[in-house]
Length: 456
Image 1 (cartoon, one colour):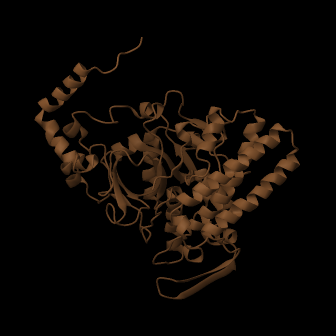
Image 2: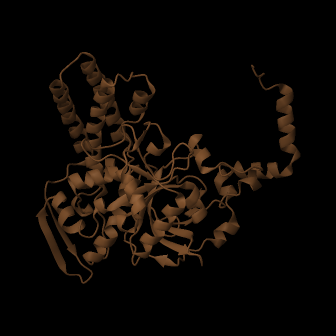
Image 3: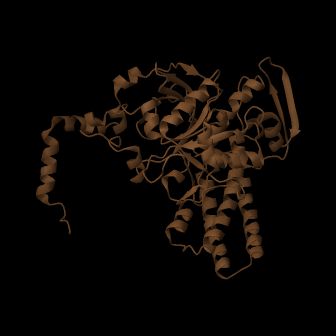
């Protein structure tokens, strides 16, 4: 059946129906002069949002971090979690690990990983205009990432204090660097696919990738700087006593000073994916998702959201903050720092609700929901039944939003928009840990569970 176009009569009816209700005119007056989401904010929910919690980690780290104009939230959230026990161990007033250091190595390693993917997909006989290769070529050099990708980088390259490798213009505003790298790896992809099609040897193809990586490394090094092979960490402790560690390599710095208080290999990543096609207590991975050749795969251990919330609360009780991934943009009052299903009264302004009428599974299936941002949980309030009601969230957007950079999230919001958490394996039930021993089911590269935390 071919549906007719909108007729003049239909359009007039729509216009008449709009102006028949005076509330539409009031809403129009407000929304044409202010941002619609600001107009929808519920003042009563704002008044009920109080940053007091029943359980909180002993001390939140300082300073509040700022990822600036980049998609490095996954890196910032990880380093913000790690620095909490590190600050306590070394009696520091404040501290930041170098986010730019991890960012540098991710750009280098991810480029190499992508060039190898080009070869692999060519050998699979995947057409360049097919869905897989088209998807991989669409955004080959974005900033986002997943927990297992962080583990790969830290275990291979270690960590460094921020003072030893500070930010650059391109690490704080990465769009132009990403644009240059994207153009180069697409150009290199043409060459590599042609070599595979022409039957070049593995050795010749490896040699060509090595040549291409010289150029990639040069571009990244020029824009971000190149970390020194060794450094000396000098600092004053809380007693204002001078301390010095090094010279030491970043990898040895991680192994000797960081790993004893935070071992990334002791942390496990759990996800919640309620789609009927993806059952709980099952391991999943995503085709072509990764950043380090030879590194560990991104593995998703799918569990009910209630278990994720329970484990987050348990982690906070033992004084360990929680890295988590969510869809930050939905039902979020950014300036106020409130993540609350009722913070926006869409129905009052537009006469209909938005997004929430769909289930979490439906939002994933229909492209309405996926992980987009990583942050840190530092506190929780539990009710008389020991169930979470609200959470305190450390963000990485500076200290001028929410409560000096911290957000308040209701547990109802957690249920709907949190997708992933990382906790110590010591608090995870054995039957859940056993899921990691399964052969993971491979989801397609474009699956919503393959999205990368990268909102800024």
